[in-house]
Length: 363
Image 1: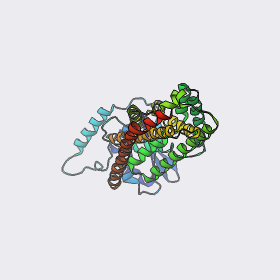
Image 2: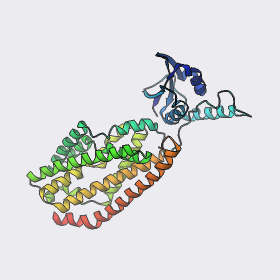
Image 3: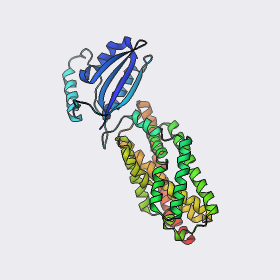
Image 4: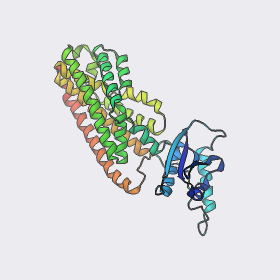
């Protein structure tokens, strides 16, 4: 896992309290400097997997203090290297045992620990870092709109020319995976603001792509039977859902473990834009049954991606930072999982028994 520098800014009058809190951190991993304006900054070098618990404990102690600020900064490398997580956890346990007795020792009850949060899969980055990395991709700004439109043009060309390489390029360019990862994270954290923003971003992106492809289909003659790439986006099978589910899980693992490079492969595998473009082209060209089949595949992909990503976030131990939010989130997450599951079940039935026949007959 990568390294992070945790920087805590507080008024200088809290210097003794800060030293007490950071007592359990080795002196060669923490530093403090005067910032002026009666402020000081304490910097602590830690591994990314312990940042969340570390930050939660710091916030719990200082968030009510005036002018408190906590900042996470990536650190490329350090020498000498930090202890391995297993060694660090062992040292932490030994320190806890040593500090226990008939009563609390001076400072021992206030000192923070650097144990990583409990997960069922792999070590992960902090909740705050995860939120910032994902939420930024759920903003329907001008860049999002332009990238969606350009990717739709590329996807339409690839579908019409029956060129898989061009379609893959459109998948990589299309910014549609980010809003769905944000929607899954918002569901996991019970963040209604992020959920609403993600849904709005999905509606804008999908609506623009569908509209542009529809207009294109009005002016271009399309024969679905002669374009296997278009037909493949309408005659869906259960393996398409398995692909979307696996892609959503891979995407969530990539962002929680700090491996964003893997998202490129997820963008290609999840295939949200091609069925959207295919649906628009088919509706515009006068093939409504085939267009509905493509839309059904799109909805099934979205539901599968979100269900899988939410499950991985939960298994990775992503939770709100307070217990009352956790209770509220648990209920919201259960409702969302039920909704996604029902959608997938209904879409599986429609894909297998209804739209598949409609697509084949229309082609």
